[in-house]
Length: 470
Image (tube, rainbow, N blue to C red; front, side, top):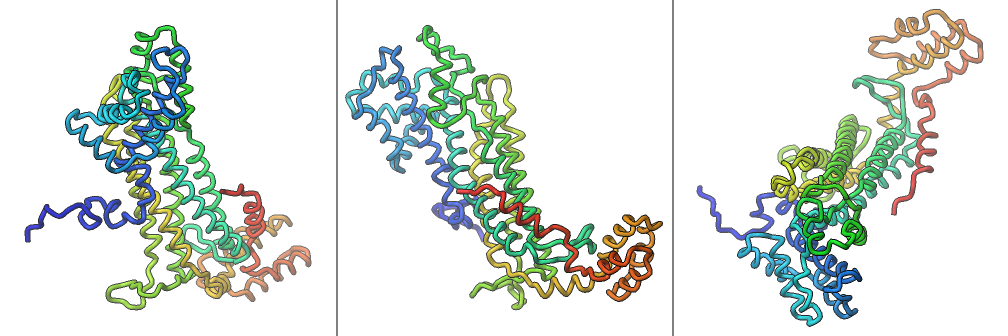
């Protein structure tokens, strides 16, 4: 069987599942990370630079624009269409240079307004391609982060926080090293994840995204050759900050990408936390702590009709892993450039979209999985009621208070390695202890369900102190 290579591009023929199988799940990223989006951002930067030059009183050759001219110029990126992008690509087929194609496109556009006839050569004035590109990618990252990823993070933490609040008092047997350990509550375990995601989210949200705009090797060489009297660093800083970015002063031809690496590392850490959550919830489902709501029409197994598999958390784990790998490569590669510039970062930067897409799919899959969970309180109670040995920690610690010799060893001899510990055996043991009567009674009344420390209180204090996300 020889497959055909003549099929048109579609969700079925796309090489990447990002644009194929999962295209509908990540389409919200296309306005920020597609080739169309990159071209539109480039047009925006070029147009804003021309507007910035026109606002500089010392540049007599670029007089201030009328309101009509400003509106006309701003409308070019605002109304940028697929036809416009195709026009740029058509120019690129001749220039073999993507940014130069944008410059020529913009010159053709402004030729329709007579006010630009005398200033069209100031489009791309003093710029190297990287001046346009680094700002375009920076805007892409800023918007993709703020408009898509942060809301997705907030969505999952909001659900987790609500579950943590609801289950703050729900006791569960903890497991350290996979073995029964001192009880906790399900709400406390979920709140732990919320705290970690909050911190990771803040690191993602507050990472600076810097842009540079200083010419071929970062020294304003051409700018100063043309206008030596102008304060180009100040003009550059004002321009970069006016379009909503932080200014990068010290560069070679390229912005060094250290902030981008920091953002990638922050997102990679977020994915690590998500993988940890996915695996824990997968395990809790396996233990029966959670049941999964069935969805009409869904099939869990092609041969076993009874199966309801934790596929959402498995899907989340897989996508978080791919995102993590891409992000780690981006963070390791992009800050390295030979001398003043090599082009190896150009191809790599085009994979920011797939990295963000896999992050988004991981978050959405975990969020979807959380919506299917139902706690099995009876299962949790039954399991705790079969684990009275976990009270050994409490008893030996009380014995230490009253200076009873070898308290740990006494409880170790009583409980370690026993297949089952019943409440009566523990209570009989407590009666023999040389401690005050009220301490004996308190220990005798203790149950695994009640031995949860300050778990519930901690959850409520933590949730009350969380900042609201809008």
